[in-house]
Image 1 (cartoon, each protein chain N blue to C red):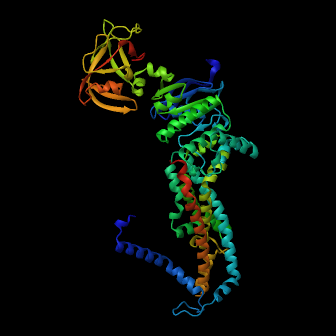
Image 2: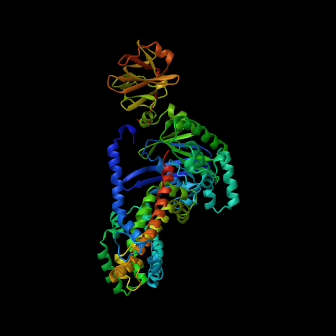
Length: 272
Length: 359
């Protein structure tokens, strides 16, 4: 922005507004973070003394560990499978023109727009019909349905920045279609592929509603949190909340670094 | 010419849905020649090149490379490397890795690969940039990388799709001589697609002019310039004055602006048939007084002038609205009143005229 055109009041107002927005979004999380280190049993002001006793309590609970293991197991598989599916769908969109492509894209991107309760119920009804409910695989299947569109959207964005001549150039230089995929398309899309891995894992890690419907006894961590909340109000929830938040944010930040950091060199081939 | 042909287009037609991009193309490309295919956008020149590279399949007809039909050969099995208009360098590979790519795809070992790619970088004078990223190179340097990347497999033919269009004027001229020298040294065939007359005429041994999917003329720059075959070619070159009319009983051409004599060798033209006479702008002259009887002339008004180096191009308009142009040196022009709207005589020797074979 040009210095001449600046209005100090407007500028201050805008900055304050941004600050307020961030405060609105992060205050509950920050509160949860603060209370997780509070010795008092109930969240209240003034705070009691600093304490890690709730962390100790959580760490010594075998049910929490089981939930975490489950979450990680589910998250890893979901990330890999839905990224693969999303990449395939995005490449199809990039490479081919066919009748009904708009409908294909709409359908492929649809799942995240379905209310999760409906999706969860439908999943439960469907999976129990084929005897797949109440297991880790149920959560995996449900989460792949939710996550694949995210992976597709991310990869699609990256492929849209690619000079379409690149793939043809690879063929022209003697690369078969598989070789072009391996040596040109995948290297070009690599930042998006890794980004999609992290994002889908984060989505799976956080997702609660659908997992609650289909997980049965193999609860993931967010489902476990609800279990705590129903039993007793315990600061342990704050501990788990903080933990889940830190993990998710780490994954999302990794993805952001990958997607924005390397995207800069993308248009260089076609410009200039 | 049979033994000399490297590529043969035999009745090749390309349709995209209802649109015919290339109509019945018969063309031979000779071994070791620099052939330019020229035309405005949508004339089918790029489609022709892409069919040769195997990126588009002909709808009808046959393309032969070295005598063998290649219609069904996928592009990665043809040795027809191409330099792209966008250059299509791989942004995730550095300079030498880009050049190595084709060798890697052919299963050449890593050390051999590096050595051969290195040689080409040296030849293109870009060795110092071997480890650079593509985004760190200038336009001219990228051009050289693209050339090295295509030539590293030592093909018999190199396809070039308007590779210079993104460069600024002086770099363009420099790359033209780089390309021309390269083609002479290697002795391989270059097929160069362009919309630029100056590029095609400056570099090519033979030029193919296309319009609406049809070849209008094939020939050397000299041949096309001096004797355009069709009105389209004459207009496309933009360096001739064109007079269309009917042959009168006395063998002159009767047009809306006057009666003109035809050059002597035009014995085949019958009275009553239509004909088009073209006169090069360098063989047309200006005068403020009526020229002598050895010349043909037409009156026209000055509408504009364009100065290009030592010569100037004067644009004029006849009474019936058709445009004329005259190229002349500054000394001659200085003797004439040159204001816009000035009435002048445009004149020429009948022997300098050329009658289009196809009116």
